[in-house]
Image (cartoon, rainbow, N blue to C red; front, side):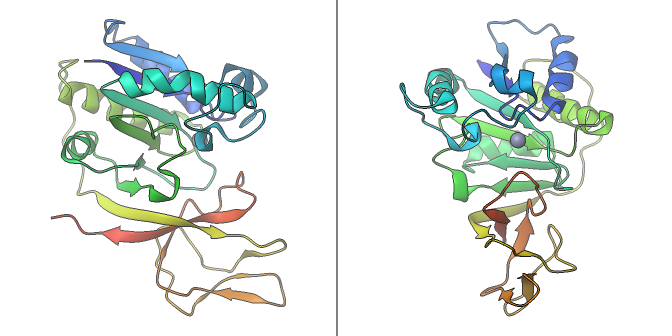
Length: 249
Ligand SMILES: [Zn+2]
């Protein structure tokens, strides 16, 4: 069993560092668990990235810009791991979401062990994010850089490690059912447009509903969708992602 716990994919997000400190206390064999800081340069500067979003830079390039080179360097170890965990935080108000780029049986069992409130199947970024090379890849997007987020991510990771047989630990009762969303695409943000009132993450936008305006013109939804990661102030070209509920059998 080889597990990577990765943090600092986005250098401005700090929660992963606090989570890493807690997980280190478990003193898991380093042959089994590697804890790594993905982008030390960006992390030191507390910047999301140096040249471009590392979480959109995979599989990377040997002679590209900073993040493209980094992605290229990180890819083989991510590919070789049995399980790859990536810790993020968000300013969007999104809470307790696990992000995956595939949903096979083994990944689904891991998610059920973790017990997030939401699972987002990110088809929109499945070929270029940190999870892309992983056999089983799970990102934690549980909230802002707070003690509460740290605590719930640590519980989730402990549940996963117990499921994988790496630690023996008594876990709190399993949380309620997980809601799964398929995320096929982004929702573009034309220059000057802002979200219309009442548009909130996980709250259905109906076909024909106005979801953005520039004061004069409006944008209407072509089909029903759930806003996901809307309000993330680090995205400039899109509001967030378009979600559809996934019913699993
Ligand atoms: Zn992030």
